[in-house]
Amino acid sequence: MNVLGKVLLALLPDDLESIFKFALLFVVVPALVIAVIFAGPITAFEKVPLITAEQAKFYINAAEKVKKEFNMGPDWRELVAIDAVRFKQDFSKADPEGAYKLASMFVKNIGEVVTENGLHFPVYKLLSLDEVLNMLDFTEEEKDKVKEFLEFLKNADLSFLLDAASGVPEGWVPAEKNLKWPVPGIYTITSPFGPRIDPVYGVERFHSGVDIGAPAGTPVVAALDGEVAYAGWNDGYGLVVFIWHNNNLETRYAHLSSIAVKQRQVVRAGDVIGYVGSTGKSTGPHLHFEVRVGGRAVNPLDLFK
Ligand SMILES: [Zn+2]
Image (cartoon, rainbow, N blue to C red; front, top):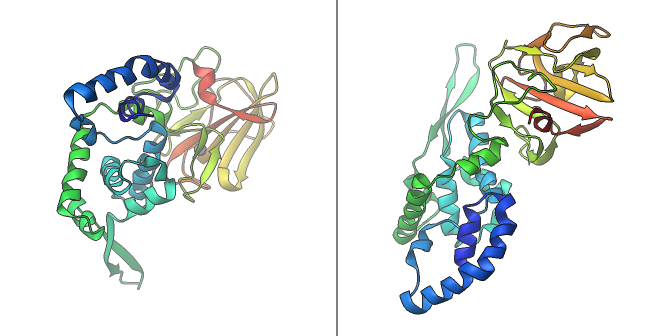
């Protein structure tokens, strides 16, 4: 595909891709040919990272993971700008491991503190973009290019990329027509349903629910009338409540700090069943909310449209 085509695709959500591929063929390609003949090379596009929303997610997730690990980390746009230069715009070379490796270069171990009882804690410092570029042996010219890309990324409207990361647009509110939202009033999706980079192990896994970011202790309610199938500890889920409903439907509420119901208890939609926590395989307080139909996990957000 031509450069302009890639740029346009890079700036569009994935689902619009096919419509635009069609338009590109008949509108943009001839226009580009004319532009190149009459106007010469279009230098502006050299400043636009030719990255798709899917590839950008590697960098968004990597920056987030480093921030969770060290309580500090780079801006994901810095990572994209660096790799636009390193890969000479060929982002097919990007992958989650590479993005994470790059992101962790921004965090440097600068020593340790030893507590009175002899415990050692490492101390980290966040490096500047220039310090990282020096570590990567970038030339002055390459450094300038990185800054040009960064400039573009900081001024562009990239909200759709962040939407892609959370799965919902900013300010999204669930429609509670059939189910009650399990964390009343808190609609922050920190991780969507589907394939993702596992926040604990850093490898790609299928995320069987949605993560709703909420402070520890926030009440969690049953999404539907039903009967508690299980309430207790379950490995990766930590403290969890499974509720059976009609029509082969099951909902799961994981990583709770405490549980407010017992097995076999009948609950109504909206009843408090537990409280948000970070038990089990979790990197911070949130509710992992899962919906299963006939045993198979489905995207819970589809039921709140
Ligand atoms: Zn989860």
